[in-house]
Image (cartoon, rainbow, N blue to C red):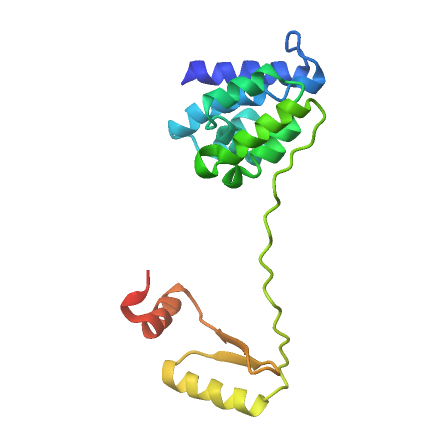
Length: 201
């Protein structure tokens, strides 16, 4: 464990001071592969990410992404290391690792294809990984004054049935929002028992 920590510190200190032998500022990204493999050893041995971030004065997200880089197939690592001018820190950490779920599908098929494309196009080429489509949740336009009499009636009936204060607000399409209010965790558990019974996880 101590040896691994010393190795990481040595690499990080070299990187931050710009003293990596025969490596220019624009080609240091591949060394995140080496750092990631060492961090991965510590992580798998039980060291939490937050502790790694504290011990090595690095961002948790960067450490997490470097640990993922250590997972990619060895033949891809070898290709990347052979072309440090193409695979910059931006590409490795902020693109590949940031989109790791997409990259590792079908045994890293997407990543293999992108690595090969970048090798053919050469340094300076931008990755073409698809951006994840954001799920758009339609907004409910609630109006506390709409159907207020029905709201008050239902709130009273729920209070009588469950014993919990609640709030019901409708929108003009018939949808709406239901809120329950509870004092503490014990009260919440009691409410969940009434609503879900044995189905509470």
